[in-house]
Image (spheres, rainbow, N blue to C red):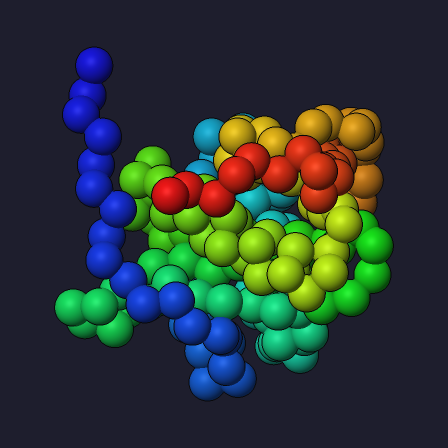
Length: 175
């Protein structure tokens, strides 16, 4: 068994308009790196291409309560997670970790912190559209599969997983 990698030291802060280009690059890199494992080339292009929609991507980041993990030693962005600021259930809009720092618990930690922020603000439940890559992270955080659908994104069909979690299903915060 391989030893677990240590979670990189990071600051957690709100995303800003100035972060959007770096977050788009991270999103694109994740889609290009991990997409070919389960998606066709056309699906990868559709997924990665969203990062090129400047206005759409900016809204994707800034309309949600999006927070970033910024490496302490060099200020690079390691990942980001965004949760809708209103609505019930609260939608987890984004959860991305930079290739090269995956499988270290960072995605799980970003999701935990983001859900806790929303819970403190009154959220009673959460939902997300998960990919084959994010679905295990959501399931470890207490989300359950609600349904699987075929849907179009950027003119391309994808299988998507709707995952949901009630607030009373939230695991306790680590001590």
